[in-house]
Image 1 (cartoon, helix red, strand yellow):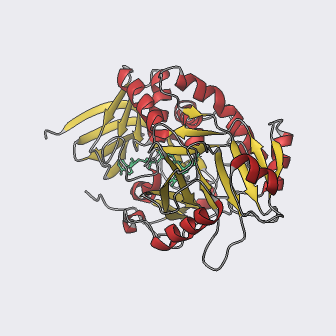
Image 2 (tube, protein in one colour):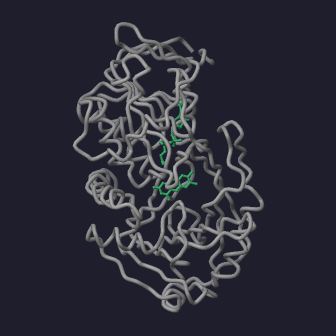
Length: 404
Ligand SMILES: Cc1cc2nc3c(=O)[nH]c(=O)nc-3n(C[C@H](O)[C@H](O)[C@H](O)COP(=O)(O)OP(=O)(O)OC[C@H]3O[C@@H](n4cnc5c(N)ncnc54)[C@H](O)[C@@H]3O)c2cc1C
């Protein structure tokens, strides 16, 4: 292929859901934007793999509940561009041992945060959960909450909508098979190298998902993160009348079984007739995304299948399809998002905006706006103080030589 080049206002590195959302909002502000994706758009090798995600209000931290609320108008705006439902509002059911505190939070503390933010929910006993939501064999001390506005996110449709809006924008250029292998600077302009050519811009937005280190190493720093290759499985419904909300169960770990399990409703867009159940614990975290394989960890799968067999009547207990998805998580207890500028050790750092780590599908439309604000204005009206943690998680490192 002939080498191409071009000059832009902003280059977005990473064409997953976050990169496409950032580009969408940059385009809306008439910023000439280039999105560089190392693989193809809609690839299955990053954090936006698969089809469904959970949109939920329960969080232990009030600021996260608030941010979920803030995301709603941005979901509504994105929904106005497509007839495919982006959110299937089936509600969120959190249940389990009320004394358990996990990286996802704690039921009682989430109730307090929901109350403080005026988000409605109902409290449930173990017997009510079994009767209303068709789980069985729950210990009598389990409690729960149901929040009616939770949803299953059609992530594939979300990506498609953002992609098509970007294609229609006169301001956004989408380039795939364009792995970034070098970032240089000349007179405060960034020069980004890919096998398809060199591109320049005044600003960078770095959203490379679990490949974050490969990109920020080009600027001489890295991130304290861990990488999870998470396993999901699909179980066939044998009782067709059963419909589940999105749900999460909090339980004490048993040996190496983290015992945190979550699941989805049946949705028309993802294996109709099946219910997806996933573990929210990883037996073997990776130290880099390169260690990832597409084979689910068999022990993780077995623990989850055992839980399904014991507690979910109406599902055939053998998983019939599986999938994996890789995510980078910061090494803080609640696995926070990091939204910040590059550290001051990087020249021109105030013009490099970074989003990395965390569970962020529910925030995709809002974070695109926040990242575009940060790139174009250097600030955003949204409160991101809890996520501006680069000074804690970014570490200076030898600058990587151009790799490709
Ligand atoms: C199993 C699993 C379950 C999840 N569940 C939930 C959930 O229920 N709720 C929720 O809110 N969130 C959830 N998440 C998180 C959510 O899916 C992600 O936060 C979200 O999709 C954002 O992805 P991203 O765009 O940051 O990363 P990605 O989708 O990984 O996109 C980054 C892109 O950058 C590209 N890239 C990397 N390096 C380069 C380079 N050098 N040059 C060019 N391109 C590059 C990659 O190829 C990739 O396509 C889950 C994630 C996983 C894996």
